[in-house]
Structure formats: C-alpha cells, structure tokens
Image: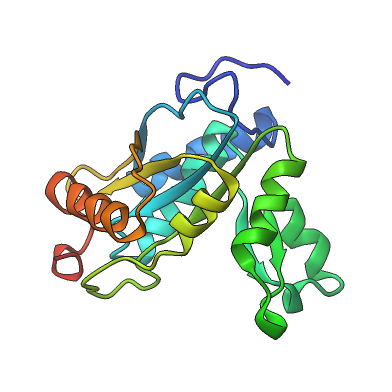
Length: 198
C-alpha cells in the first residue's frame, strides 16, 4: 500500500492501514509526544531505541511506529509463541528466538534478514531503564552477521520527541562501535530520566 508520509522512505517496511495510523497519531498526540525525522532509505537495518531511561520510551516508540505505519520486528523467546498468543505476537511484529542449547541468535537473525525483502529489527541496547556504563552488544552482533547498518531512534525527553536520527557508521570492531554509539547518544540526546543515562 502506498501513502504519503514524511517519516518513511520508499524502502521502509510497512504495516497497518489508515485506521491504525489514525489511532496511533491520536494516541501519540494525546501523550504529548511527536515523531520527527525520517527512516533511512535502505530496506534492511537494525534500529536501536536510545537513551532508554523510562517506560515512556517504549510507549512513545510504539505509538510513533503505529502512527507512521512503520513495521519493525522485535524479539521474543519462542516459548511465548503458543496459542492464542503466537498469532497475535507475530501480527504485531514479534519474531520467535531460539536461545536453547547454545543457539546462535545472530546467525538466526541473519538468516531472517536474508529471507525478507524489507525488514527492521529493533533493540534497546541498554537492556534496562537503569544507568549502565555500556550498551549490550547483541544489536551489533546481529548487524555484523546480517551485514546491515544500525539506525538510531532517539528519545528526546525534554522535547518529548521520538527522533528518527541517523545511520551510524560502523568500523566492524565491536568495542569501538559500541562505545562510539553510546558516546554519540550521551552527547546528543537527553532521555526522559537523565539520571538513568550517564
């Protein structure tokens, strides 16, 4: 389905319809948040939501994606995919991850990326709303394994903006890239609860 949306690129994975976008837009305005920026013009990428300092981050991001019609995939343990939860979770963008018996999650997701024409997988790299000295590296391991870029979606707490920020240049070195991304986020964006950020 084609529609005009200033936040989307021609390659953006999409879902929903005019009704779901209208509901998302209404609820986003009701909470006082606003979506700004534009998705990257690439069909496959990893997206990270940062800085993750509040429950509002997830609420605002979900409503922003619903309002724009953007589809992102989120990861859930395969044990959650039972009837009737399985079909509901899949419809919302959930992907079943097998973590049993030393399963290689980055390789699982690399295969998933390969099987799709357009796909974006989302990660909260802090893994918590609390203060952390560094990000978890799962998002980078997946990006490297799938050979896809990393896009930053920032939560601008003071302005209450969900910001579609930028593709971050990667060197291929895990520690270097992870530290550089966190440094950029901490120097550029302030979360809803700054005390949980740096």
